[in-house]
Length: 334
Image (cartoon, rainbow, N blue to C red; front, side, top):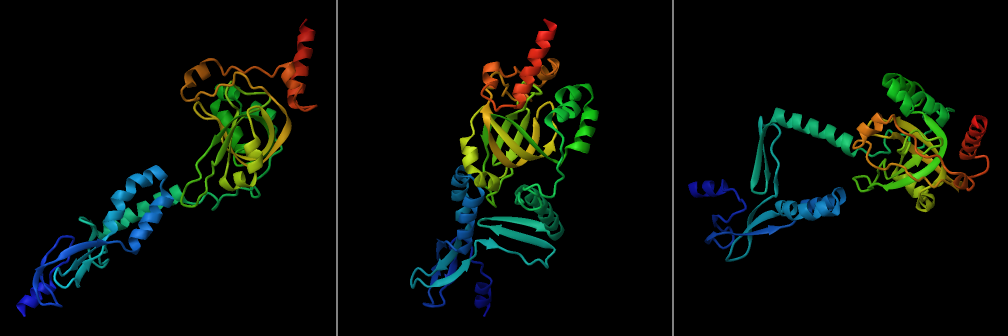
């Protein structure tokens, strides 16, 4: 009776133990086999889905073996005597909780566990929440403004920021922040984002660096980010875009430029227009790396398009108007 009570209290772990077989009545040292289970499948496919291929390649050999269950068998009759699941789940009525992960164990008080879970939930929410949830990609619920690029440059441009950053920020919040604009500009560079994620969505699946006319600095004037779904719906247009191409876009203003960042917008429509701009001399270096020179030089303006370049632009375009104005000024001065 005492012997049965002792054997009933034996815990089958991941190492062999001395045990009396219920089937052949032999006193044996059990053999332990490690078997995959449904948890192994969830961990395997979940790791592939959430992590990048390189990260998954590193993590899978470490994580998946921990999900195996240890099965104890009799070496004589090969019958299963007991097993241990890969993850030990505690009783949440206990004040002190113990979690087993393979050969490892984590002991926490119930209060500490609740705090950890709450913090983890908040982090996961703001890290992995689908971009399309709670955000209006189509811009239907955002106010559209008739403000032009020239007006933006006058109210929130680089020169205004240099003179009075607070004034520029107030103008931006009042007239542009979270408002939709419909402007046209010229492609400086396409930056492809990463669509891999728990929901396969990304607000920055494609980012276009855009030069406006007239330009505001030697850097690209705008960074327009497009979400995964919009890029898929307009794949032909995005694939055809090259440096200097003329585009019309509708986008929501998200952030005003700073010493290290460009004006940032979230785009929801894009249309390719006739005309090109050679865009020579555009500074693509990081604004953060060049912040000191950027502000010391009072944000030098990049060269305007030449007469030969503007000839290829659409008739009546902004570039043509600017060149005509410059020619008239030079004639009057002469």
